[in-house]
Length: 555
Image 1 (cartoon, helix red, strand yellow):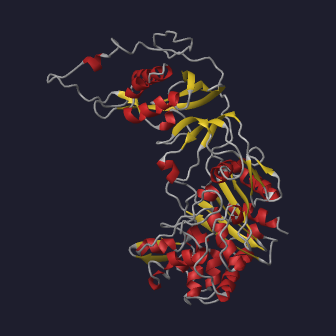
Image 2 (cartoon, helix red, strand yellow; image 1 turned 90 degrees about the vertical axis):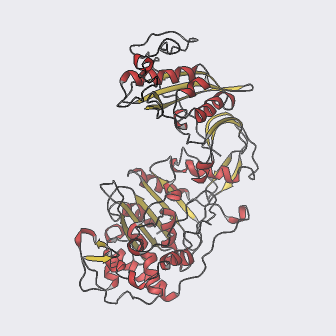
Image 3 (cartoon, rainbow, N blue to C red; image 1 turned 120 degrees about the horizontal axis):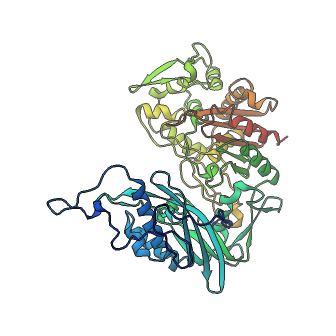
């Protein structure tokens, strides 16, 4: 439970006094305070219409309104007046509960709030406090921010309430609690028995949190005392783990051994660090063991829990379905028109390309979209969903790898959305773990659920696919993926890694992004890997080098 990280003090400047206010000293805290309570109402607040009803204020907030509302809130919070502070928000009930818990449940005292310069309606502020529980105490320091809004009922400026105002790691519905951690810490080991830490492997912070939450109570450890974020229902539904903010006393950790390879993990960390918003996973096809997981951003485990359109890497699953149904073979002549109309939509290939005369293998290698979408009239709405679930074990929400994961989603869709799903758009959602498993399934010929902790550790049952692809289908898939790795869109990244290899690139358009998410999944020998670089561009150029570099380590 929780990240094993302490929040470092970030600012040591003197508290700022808000300009234009009457400054007074409150308990030595040095906080600039305006005389807001009693006699401080503005002319607008005192004014009322002829009917005796106050008009609802509208229009942009003035600097004075932002200053007044933010100061009122911060002053009351600093003084421990939770109800008064909450009254200055647009959700007094939720605010009062969390602000009361700040003192009562989180055991935070000596709170000092120092505002920074406002940017429009947003006011940053720093927080310093002491976590005091029984005979233990430690300092806490962090930065946060609030935004002033107009209250709907009367237009008065108030703080727009979200739990993140109290602490940036809080989601709405979460709480802060200090006490016995409930879940003892764990020492996670790699496959060789070495200790895994977030300091050595920054991407593993969320993974270590998940391991503690899953195995802390059964791994033989003893709980310590800590201030932590306790997740509410919404955060739990999003599979967010509790998070430790301050550790007052260390517990005695238990031990959990993982399948991670220190060599591959270190290499994966280096590869994603060179890109923004990059994620990668390496698995062993013959067993499902996860050898590495890395993200260039460390706050969310996109590699395991991301939910992104996988673009053309999904064409591996689509091709499996087409081969099994006997609708096409790798060498069959199959055109890829420049445009294709389906259910009122017109689909285009990348850069307006087309293949007038050529094999299906050529279209797969070139990732030509319409060579896949034009099969839609011959398919049922549920065909792709069934293929993903029954052969690749995707979208069943039953993977048990040892930490939280998103197991992919291929919903049943119709019309143009069904056509878009065939090329990894529409409602299809995946992450690098899912797509590494897809490449591994092709390589092995059978689905092995990926896992980070061996099932023998806790007796859990790994997910299984309902059926196995035929050897004929596996051969056809390997043929088109090998062609792609040797001559198609993956050739540049996979150069020199053949001949026992296969790959598929992908680019997924995302609304609001200038560049698509770049995907790449491949296998080589008894290794499979997949990666994504968000808003990076074509997969062969962005995620491809990351995946290929890791596969090259397999010899």
